[in-house]
Image (tube, rainbow, N blue to C red; front, side):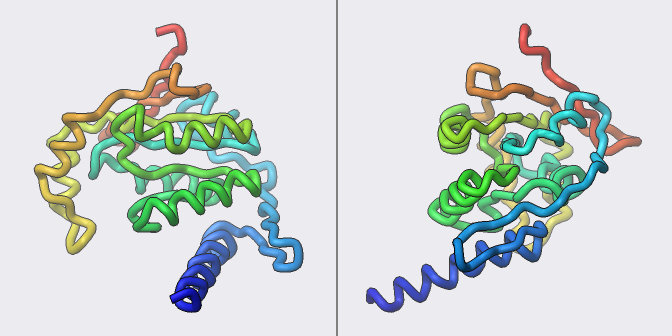
Length: 208
């Protein structure tokens, strides 16, 4: 039993290394058990908000997505954060234990990350917020305010395990709590579907 456990742990650690190296440009030094961040250069991908552009330049940054299934979170990540932030997602990692280990790895190496889950309640979001703030990360939240009809339509185009039953999406919507600054964020953005640009990104003023 012990041998099989350590074999499984070794394979999981190898998966983390592969994700960091192949998908995100990190380099692993086995001798000192550390990752080095890739050189990002001076080019910054700009969105419609100047605040988002400035946010890319902060090294220790955690981004938390929240929104129902089919709201476009993963597509938004691929378009705007794939080259700069590690993706932490239950769709990818499958278990909370692997997710926790990936988050801890990011915090230990000061790597930027995006949590790409539904994260409907403030309580659920705290599992990422508390350790990230303790590690002195800046936290930003993107709230995907997608109409239910649009999410159901996107979900209908999926197949296999990627497709969620409609009542599951409705259940997530029913418990959705919009993010608030008192959770620990420095910026909150609302992401709204737009016909021509794909998304409209609006920063929420802190004094609202």
